Length: 107
Image 1: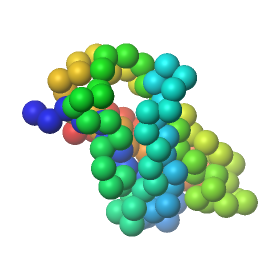
Image 2: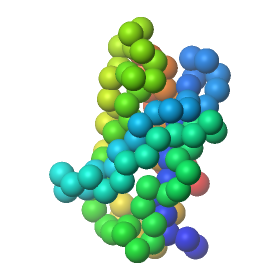
Image 3: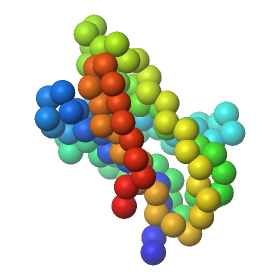
Image 4: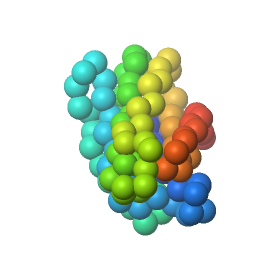
């Protein structure tokens, strides 16, 4: 199994992938990765690959306010999660509207 951390963003209000969302990954108050979602709502590369994925707490920050513009109630959506197995694959998607969001551990 490839050990990676990936994400994607779905714009539930418009029913399509959210392209152009800035995504940051933080660990221990340190920026680990910064990318922007592509036309498919995904980052072009894993946020962390097997060499850098370690057990611990992480935070993804999704800049959805800039994506939705002035109508957005949300600005930056933080998603904190724990990596308990550095040998596993972690996929943390964000389903978002200008007013709400949901996430889960995907496959």
